[in-house]
Image 1 (cartoon, rainbow, N blue to C red):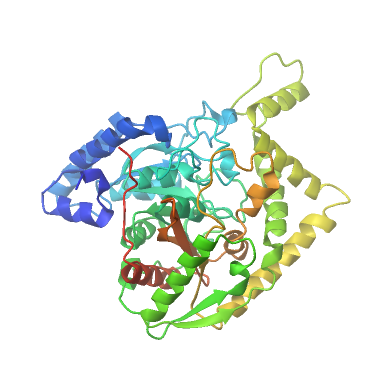
Image 2: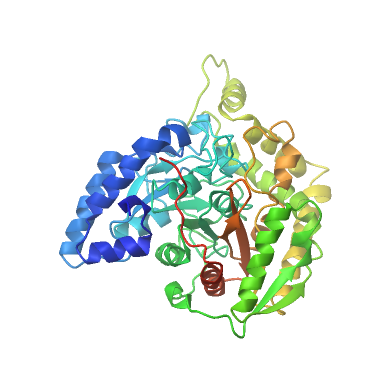
Length: 486
């Protein structure tokens, strides 16, 4: 086994036993990045010198008996999170030369644990997209099949883990941006409950929906990384002040006594047959593990896409107003007035999809339309939340597909933004409700592309998700499989 294909659990055991060092593990990942990233384009920035320095310090910690979980583990970071002294582009030309002056809360926690930060990975511009094709600095490619998308917006995170460039990654999820690329690239990804993980240092897209979460190789690794990044942070007013459970303790065999709901709306017309078959095998696997399977309905789910693209774009319109060519970031040349600076810097600095969403959001918030669009969408969001509250009175967790199809070829849908928006139809609802959700590898298509299974649970019930995911892995026999890249 190559060092860079190890899971976190395997690597920590090997380092604790003195069989490998953090420097050797990090060097193995850096070698893989050098070998394959020219084709895959997962990374925007690779900090080789910094990573090796952190690895040496991790080895020194271990010798002093000061090692904590994640000490010496190489990770990649979505380029929407601030890492002090490193670029934070958000995949956008408008932040091409911005250097973060501070660490995000989750980065502080990783550094305190002794994790090794390899660099920053590609993403859809400002996390607005489902394929990572809007990234201004290279489009990550699915490592399982050339010419196919990696998903988005955390595409670089998913590729870096699947292609054995990093043992784990941190991404962000606003409408499925962790779970969807995790499914398409064959890794495990979790969106924690809104408020479970601090958003301090996360460059905002839609503040009431954004959440930081892990992309890992299996459920055990996900539990470890989740444990490290959770906790109250007074700098984030939405961060919940509540204890963080021992997530690894939830990874127990058997589902006896658990009730797993199957929402009929997730198996509607338009779902790829192979995706549906994988989800049904997952349902059968949980039943075999002892769970009771119950039918559930989420009647307002058909409205999720419309609600999401009103609320998210409205929040984006407000959040992205700060990128004006004045304070920091890209400023256009040849401007004759302040209005000129605003217009030219924003029109030249933002990509087409970001501008489209800003315009949609500004329209929804404009005088005369606010009540008809933003207010109405907020009211329907409440109905969606109530659907989930009712569902979790009948069951402990929900199981469904993550995406409507496996990964598709590059360029598909670029001329039809609505088609791409609809690709998130199965993941958006968890963000609107603020509940935890994750994607677990469930199988493969006939062309060898990964297909994930989605699990969702009630607020702050990440433990039942992890337990259910652990049993899915055990029953299906689909553990960590590195993508077949050189």
